[in-house]
Length: 526
Image 1 (cartoon, helix red, strand yellow):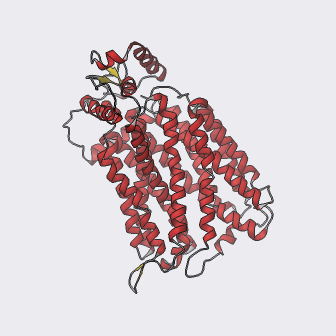
Image 2 (cartoon, one colour):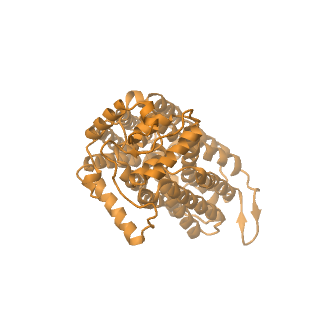
Image 3 (cartoon, one colour):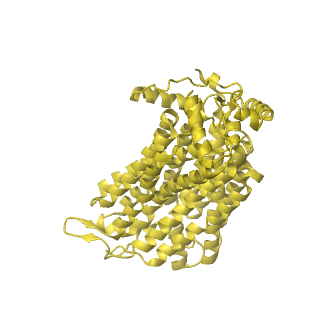
């Protein structure tokens, strides 16, 4: 069936569903007398234990991704002697997981639209965990680098698919709050990573040591960090596939079975009696596939990947896709380009005093700083990382409380503009206390932006291309993160204010671009 047949205008779909839901009652929904729109079916089975379990499991998976991404920054000082790391090697280790995430986001996202959310989630989380586990045993740099890339491929796949899977079980009146709650688990992962590093790495005698093989404290830390992803993959075995995915693929019976499972776990008093299900009033046959259809070969999968991407840049979705790319690029460039330099900024202010730009060669200072060969930093480094992670808490709480009241678009636009203003003042202040406050403020407001993007990406794109859209947007974000770090490292030697002003301008541009997005608050997803 053509893309034109599968795509309808947003206003038309919303109007049709609103009219149909107005006519449906609890009695005629359960009677099975007529086909029930998907949103009405979700509403009829209620909100209960299943959704709490869903939030906990998907949240644990999100935390596992955060732990895997952030663990590298904690182990690098300790690993530099064991792996004989130069500054260039460290740079590659910082960037390689984003390269893997860029590849994984695009590949896994499309496969989730073809083969289902749950199976792809299990696969990507397993790749993430195994890549990290093998990397902990690597005795040479090149093998460690390859394993971190593979781990990044898994992370890049699980992040977009988790949000697609989670969203498709949620009734529209709970969607904003629940997705915001899910996004807060990234902060939890940040805190867990910092706490584990603080608890494990500062113990140089912990582990196994021999002439040919060493498994010391930082390697144990890396191995422990894989537990969340591997346990998440195992627990998804017991979860149902997304009923929205089944329905989009023309598998109505399987969609009903998934909804029946949700209803049973929720402990609903009335029996589940829906016998026919449609997406919206006039969409009872979007994609007709036989339940026993065999999986396509690689060539056909590649064609599907290309087709899904073409739909994102087709006439219907081109504007939305373009604006979201701009927002993802500017926020990722600004956030990751600056966030990874905060420790060096703190160190420089502590050493030289004044503003962060008082010393002209911040990058040179960083490159000339070396750790002793035991590679174990002082505990205050891990404490600082722990406190930085906590700075995201206010933004997460705020989005949970007001996401559905204020709306996604206003929060995203305001948070990015405020982040840009915050960065602009960073080179001006002359106190380490003020620097700390500004960095914490930056972390808090950008958290609001990230949470708003998570909700918008889940709501702006139709089910048939939602995971692919997540993958494309995530890929753009990974490219921006890599470019942000490279650009910041290159420009600080010119003057450290230059990259900060560039970050400020880009964040502001992204925030203003968000104004052009459609409003999705309280609307049905397609």
